Image (cartoon, rainbow over all chains, first blue to last red; front, side, top):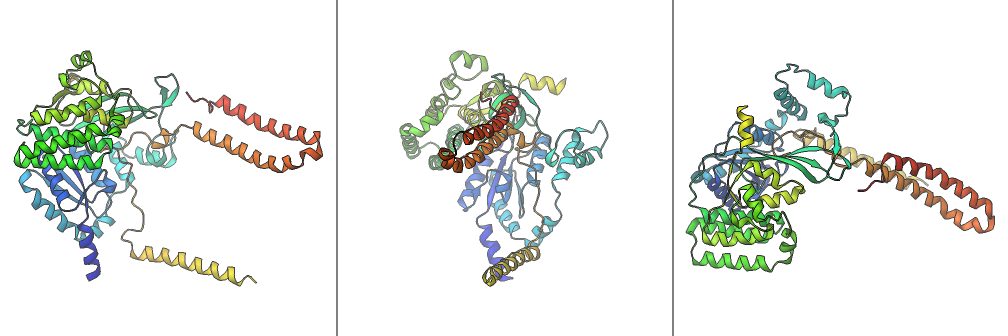
Length: 362
Length: 114
């Protein structure tokens, strides 16, 4: 019918895209973000918000599992797009918009998609493969076992927290599919209340080929975008994104330097930014030596964020961190602070640490 | 006399039923989609209910008990001057019964804050 076509076309012009970056595909992700914003779409923050799932680069097996789950959690109409190289971005997004208009396919998809208990069984099936009881999960959920499992997910056990008070321990993953998060990083946190009591960092599927870093200024400006967006200053983050795009197009010419300078002055004048970032994980020289961080990561998150601008103009390379140290860096912080601290470190590359190698080969 | 109420009631019921039937007819999948909470690509290991300690619920119950007690004290306050000592004694007996509840909550750890 004419009316439903008009409504579908109008809706497809305002789609929300969830962009997932596989390790080693920074440039593709940046081009995708740029193309998504240029055609009037928005960047989604979670699968519930998303219409299009855009996967940048080649995903390894574990990232593919995570993406499968995220795909199940997206409400219809939904479209998945894989963008392998940065020159096919426009074609793929046009294809996604066309597929969003295929109402018959979406109707069919809505009627034949798996429900929550199928996803849980699938997860239990992976874990219980050795025990061989495939029916146990389904029935256990129905009559509730000995502990409560509302919706099939068990409640947490308690434990003493850092003050000696008994609080429930929740194991939460800050995982691969998270905006403004390093690609391929999974941080397994033990949360008590809002505080991360302990954390282990893990790299999914190895670190990916590390591209030579000719785009160093662009990557530093991208780190600034992350810090500003996580601090909640969307206007400055949009300006930083525009600067990043122009750095990718023209390199660091005079006009871009002037814009960076204006952004730097804006950031230094902002009282709210200072208040948000002051005192977050201050690092001394000894900490830097212990964790293998570069010398410019000294100070708290505000110093690091302001230092990022200087590094962008100078074209310096970013930090290369090992996953061993990341867990120690976020211990004792709450979730929002942990995300800000990780963004403020300005990582260029993440390497799998020794602990992970032992687990893999042990 | 009740014609107005009756007409309103019937109209509301018809409207609500009509909306329900319209939804059932036009929706592609009338059952809501149950997906698990989003945890960045992994099924959550513990339920989010655990993030709220049970002490908040016990504190709420305590508040409710004293709120209702306050409600009973309003008329009491108006007449206590005339009735005299018996009224005061009865009110304190009532407060004593409530204090048993406070003692229980104290023993359960609902009042521990730090």
